[in-house]
Image (tube, rainbow, N blue to C red):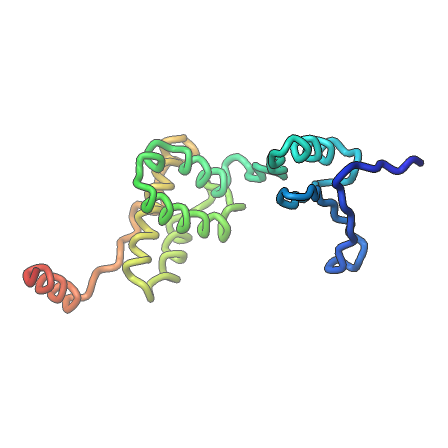
Length: 183
């Protein structure tokens, strides 16, 4: 078998994985080192090599971009991120919403949307009572998420609709009122 020799390609064996994983890099003097995916001769390797020879970075290798099953929480969250309601938000708001919903998706993403009951939402909400403001924000987003499920006809009803937000303590409300008047 002939060995493929390519200009500017360096190979080394990665000791972190038992010393058996070969790594390939494109190293041309005066240019940034570029990792090459796969093994020499494979289509993704050759494509990345050609891009590197042309002086440009190879397009990122996308692995299993959509692992969500239709009708799952993960798919619902992804569809919310593509919705007009989400896309019309300010960048900081989008970032906050994305953080909350991606965490929700990591925890419950494999569950079917139609199987979530109000008692499930109440139990998830109850875990957050130590931080009332964050819990109420989470609840508002979950209500929006399940409204989308109703709109998309994945559900008949919104299981979060009847869950009541946490009330703010009376002392906190009076402090807020006083601080507002002091401005």
